Image (cartoon, rainbow, N blue to C red; front, side):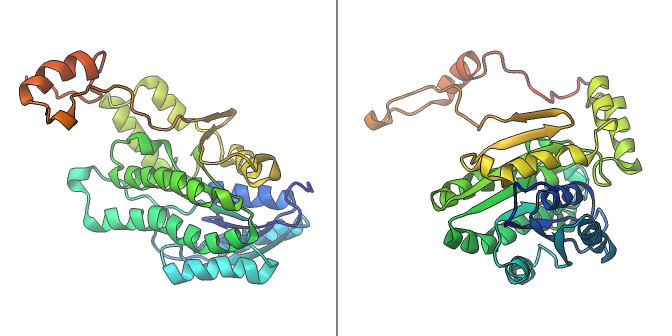
Length: 312
């Protein structure tokens, strides 16, 4: 076993399968003690199954590591507190938090139910808040902590995933804020945007969706091939271990891309073009001004990503 995380303890949510599982195993392989959290729900959030988390714990222990299982739901504020407390009670502290828990309820926005929206936002966005909220106090008092949130390329927009996109976009913005609030206390917060084949991202239903998008012209052939041939979640784990380690002590408020052999960082949103009137003199934009100048200045070289279809 490696020793990069010796003496550190971690909580990984959604750790029974997929990316969370691989991150748990990788953290333990570097000598971190790990709380493997997963209620064992289906990819849509239904049901419970204790086996996935328990099996990961058994695998860690078999390899000589230290781990305990927790089956609480991150959507419940009190349960999230108990998840964090289980790490402190079991290992004396919490140094690392990796928020991987997630569900999908894909639907076009005009057909999406309130329950489908609420369920996805509750697990991804509220769940990430709940866990960070309860871990932050311990980490601040220790003056040490590593928070790693899992986002998605869907934060840039994804057809049929308005709920998921909104949740992941919220997680990115939340990450930027947490990083700035806690950085002075020795706590870093970063995001990973993964691309990996898991039961959430590449089951038969998802493959059929990608096929429809290809046939409808919503994605290119090259993008379709990239999606249906995603690498496995084991490629994401090294980035998480790096961000959890002392080597990344000064790495904060970044969004990393991890996809197979590719690792990169995204730029933060930035204002790229402006037009000005002097409001201090009472000057305001008129509709005539905007209609004339927005296309010439702000929208120069702009292309609508989803133009209306021509009437036949």
